[in-house]
Length: 328
Image (cartoon, rainbow, N blue to C red; front, top):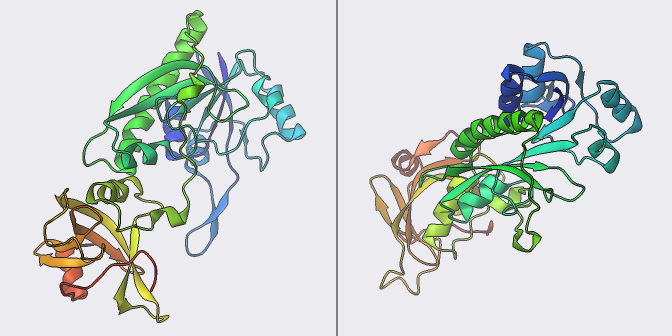
């Protein structure tokens, strides 16, 4: 089976590796994102999928700004794909492209559809406190992640999972499931089931502002968000008792936290959320909208990651100091 692969991320590269090893599958081309400026020096850098394709000498590698442009469609059509496989590509596929291969386009999505359609399903699953998630291989349609379901695979979510650790497992599971889908497609036994659109939920693309901690939320919700938003946008707050070089309150990333108490603590009903109520050997303990949260790994802007003890050594605090959701 002739396959054109579309992807850009690390997870895409893992699927591409699996396809290159799969029996009866021939990757006849890779479509990926153009090189982008990266790092402090803003050097043009290939995405992980392109870097892997170059390493494995996959040809051709097509890097369009607009994948639906007529000249790009012509390039892909000349490759005569039986199917197009898409994983974390980053561009929408138009009607003509979706209909180009005989078997259409299939996509590996990192949730159990119709739950969490959209760009950030892994973050949404952790932030929502789900116990399981998974991978869905679907037949792509014109809507956002609303095509027929071909295969699903389930993955448990661990209590200490971050978006990074969960994505590492889902990337492998996704690659295995896509290869299985192609095997069934070749055999003519690939199942197909329409989604129940009434059950659809959405996980839109993350914005930097989504990482701002709202201390009026419960300790449970804030702890989940510190894990869900790693590495980007990162959970962050402001510390008005510390001033940065511009004279503004210091911005602090909260990299790791643990729940001290999930329920409202007697005596703290009138204490403003975000207030430091005590200093433990492993980090400051903070009052939230419901419960107490210990901050065990933090990173001030422009500094390195540090554990809670090291943070307190470099940032002396007292009970009553307050982390804020806005730079007061």
